[in-house]
Image (tube, rainbow, N blue to C red; front, side):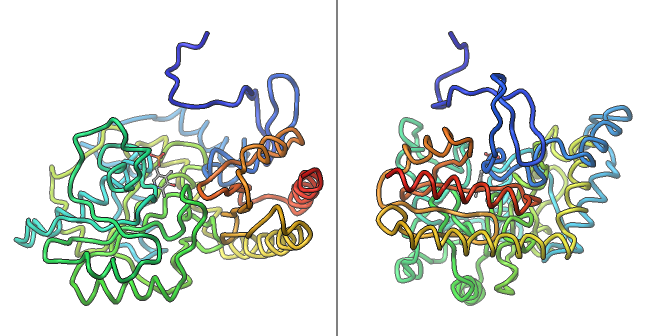
Amino acid sequence: MSYLTKNYNRKKIAFKNGKGSYLFSIKGKKYLDFIQGIAVNSLGHSHPKLNQVLTNQSKKLWHVSNAFLIPEGEKLAKKLAKKTFADFVMFQNSGAEATEAAIKAARRYFYSIGKPNKNRIICIKNSFHGRTLAAIYASGSKKMTEGFGPKVSGFDHFKFGDHQTLKKLINNKTAAIMVETIMGEGGIKVIPDWCLRGLRKLCNKKKILLILDEVQCGIARTGDFFAFENSRVKPDIVPIAKGIGGGFPIGAVLMNKKVASGMTPGSHGSTFGGNPLAMSVGNAVFDIVSKKSFLNEIKKNSNFFIKELNKVKEKYPKIIKEIRGRGFLIGLQLHNDQANFIKDLMKNKLLTIKASENVVRILPPLNVKKNELQKALKIIDKVCSTY
Ligand SMILES: *Cc1c(COP(=O)(O)O)cnc(C)c1O
């Protein structure tokens, strides 16, 4: 029997090692891993550079308190700020912590300018911002909040695309709008660029903050360093996590100068956030995935993959309803429940994971090879042909 709590519905497979896009089970089976820890292992498994950096740092220094300077963190924060809209960075350990800290930063900003009643955050219903108490109530999902009352207040919700309700919800207590640029768990739903620009305009007009949760869609996943980049919108606050650590737990909140002015000494903290081990790996991941040539390669390969997936959709229009997403954040929306489809892909040694709205989520490593994409396409086609 397992002594672990039953809060996961685990597949009965365990892995002994991984290499690039592949995972090897303890039973000796080889799987093409297009989950990659849910968009976490940006560079696949056991990347030589990351292995080297982690090993080197592990021999020097693992952890020191944030009561001291941590040069590796200073370095990564500078890189993130120089590359993006951000002026300042606050390191955490996970996505939920990053979104929580983003909420805190937004509230704290209005507090610091003498408007403590401006503290409500408007979010999309059934979005996903993590599993801490505030984050589940921010997500506005019945399933995630069930049994975890009392409710954490301060969140208002509108349905994806319901601009009228969104506008109505804004009042003098509103501090921010927080949305995922691309809804991950929610079914790979992309907020179009024109809509992001509309959100920015609306926030400017109402003098509230725009928080874009890029925990899943950020860090080169879409072929841009951030999913919102193409829209040319500048958010005020952006929580990141998943991809930046390449498998090492890292979270962070990026923010502009204005918001950061509220985060005075003692206002927030984290024991582990930004420790030398995490920061060394984060710097190495950043250096690779932020390169223009690497980003272009993602765009090229993902365009090919999405085009081919659309061909499979044309071939099986009764099975596949829509191909969603951007870059290597892809959703295969089926007409029917996707659970068996995912099982069949797995039987054919391709690992994918579900998202809402009958979506099969496909998350290759960003450095996936073209022949691996072709292999996956063959498996998807084969499984479709059996339905
Ligand atoms: C995964 C995810 C989170 C939560 O991250 P954890 O590291 O699991 O806490 C938050 N927001 C989004 C958009 C995510 O995809």
